[in-house]
Length: 185
Image (cartoon, rainbow, N blue to C red):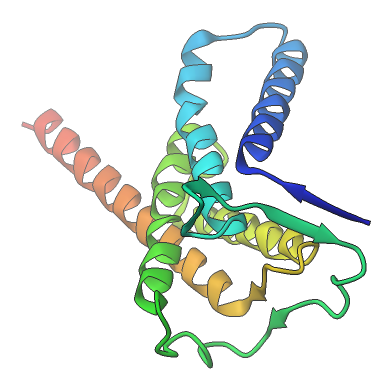
C-alpha cells in the first residue's frame, strides 16, 4: 500500500484531533473556558510547527512543502540510528541548520508546557514531557520510509526542551524572588 500525506492534511488532522480532545475535556469538566482555550493555544501552535519540520522536508518542492510518503513495502527495515552523536556533526548541506533547528524547535515546549499544564510543574517533569513528545515523533517516523528515526534528534529535541524549561523556571524563580523581596519590605 502506498499513499502520500500533505502538510495541509496533517494540519487538518491535528486540528480536528485537538478540537475533539478539547470538547471531551469540556464535557468531562462540564464547562468550556474560553480563557483556558486561549492559554492552551501556544501548545497547539507548538504541535503544528513541530509537525511541519519533523515530518516534512525542510526545503520546498515546486514552491510547496513536500509530502510524507507511506509505502508498506519500504518501511522494513526501518531507518533508525541508535548510535548517539556519530552523525550529528557530519558535514553535509544543512547539518548546522539540523542541529540548531532540532534544539530551537523544542525550546518553546519547555517554556509553554509548564505555563499551560499544572502537572508539568518542575524542570524534570517538563523535560520528561518534551522527551515523551520526541519519543512519539521518532516512533511515528518509523512508518515513513523517507524519514529516519535518530537518537541524535531525540537528544537535540530534549536539549531544546531543557533549555526552554531552564529559561521558564529561572524566570519564574526570579519573579517570585522579586515579589517576595517587595512583600518583605
